Image 1 (cartoon, rainbow over the protein chains, first blue to last red):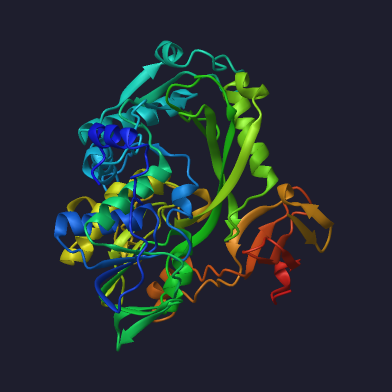
Image 2: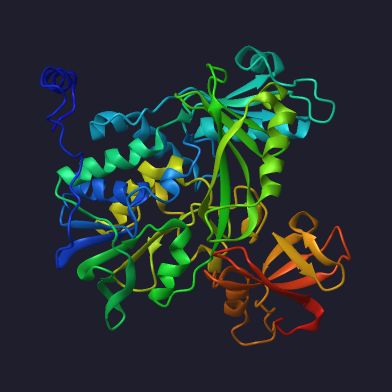
Length: 416
Length: 89
C-alpha cells in the first residue's frame, strides 16, 4: 500500500481496520541471487538498493533475531557528514544526500530532521583544527560554518561558556546535519525492499558457509541451508564471529558503546551539540527525551551492556557543558556492540574468498552511514566493483598502509 | 567490573587502563616474511566472544601490567596474573 494523505483519509473513514503489515516476514527459499547476512539498517538498505538501483530482487536478508534488534535500535540517531579526510568525506556526503531524499524514496516517514550538528571548540588549537575540517568539508561541497562564541550563544544560550577549565570559544556547525528516527529507518527500508520482492527472514542465524572449494555458495542457517551466488555480510559487532565461520581473521575488535535517554522535557536543545573538551554529544528526541552518549567503554565486549564508570564519565561531560540538565532524570541506558576497525574507518570490500563480501568496521559512526553503506555495498555486490565514493574502504589498506585514520591514533581500536 | 590484582587485591575498573589482546607477540623483524607478520600482529585480532586474554595496566594502583582473562559476553573476570610471568593465569 502506498502511504499518502489519501490512504490515511481512506483508512480514517474505514476505522483504520485496513492497514496491513508493512513488510512480509518470509520463510527461506532454497536459493537466491544474493544473501545479505544481517537485518539491521545497513543490511536492509543494501537489499533495497540491490532491488531498486540494480534490479536484483532475488535477495534474502537473513537476521538472527528480529530486524533492527542490534545497533540500528541502539544508536543516538545522529546524521552528519562533517568528515576531514578525502577517503571519508564524499562517502558520508553521499549518505547525507540520500538521507535528504530518503522519505520520498522509501515512501516512509523516517523523520529526518536537519536541525544542525554543532561541534564546540574550547581552545585556539582546537579552533584551528575545526577551521581546517570546515574548509575540507567546503572543498568537497559540504556545508560548514565556523562560529565564534557569539554565534554559538545565539544557537544554544544556556551552556557554561565561561567554564574555568574548558571555556566555549565557538563551534563548527553543519546545518544540514541532524537526526532521524532509527527504527523508522529500519522499517522503511524493510518495507521498500519487501515490496520489490526481497525476502526478509528473521530468527535465522547463520551457522556456517556453504563452500565449493574456495568459493562461498551460500549459508548454513538455523532454518536450513540457503544457496546464493553472492553472500554479503553486514553484521556490525558480530563481524569477527561470522567471519570466523568462513575461516577469516579481520582487523576488527568488538567494543560496547553506551547511550542514554532522559525523561521527556519541553523543547530545550534544537539540534545536536557535541562537547569538544571531552566526549559528549546530546540532542533531543521529538518525544522530548534528551538523547546523549560519549566514549565507548574501551575493552572488548559482546555483552550489549556497559559499566558504571562510563555512565559517570558521560554525565560529567554533560554537566561540564550544560549544568542546566543536572536535574533532569536519566530514564534508560543501553549498550550496542561496535565493530571497531583498526583505523576508525569502515570496510566495504570483497573478502579474500570469492562470493563473500564484507561490510564492517563502522565503529560508532554506523547510523549516519546507513543509506550510503547500503548503496555502496549494493553496488559492490551487483557489479563486483567498488562505488566511487567507497573506493578507499579496502580491506587490504591495513597491509598496504593506506589507512584512513580520522583521529590519528593508530591501530588502537578503543581510542577511535 | 572488578579485577583481582595479584598485588593489590580486588580493585575497581576505574583504576585500570586497557590495552588489548594479550596473546599478540611482537614478530621477529629478521624473518623472511616480517612485513606480513607485523601486519598480522598490528591489525588482525581473534576478537573472541567468550574468554579473552587481555592486558590491563593498574595505573592507579601498583602500576603493574596484568594479564586478565575475562568473558567478553558477560564481563566476568576469570583470573588475573602479572603479565611479566608470561603464561596465562
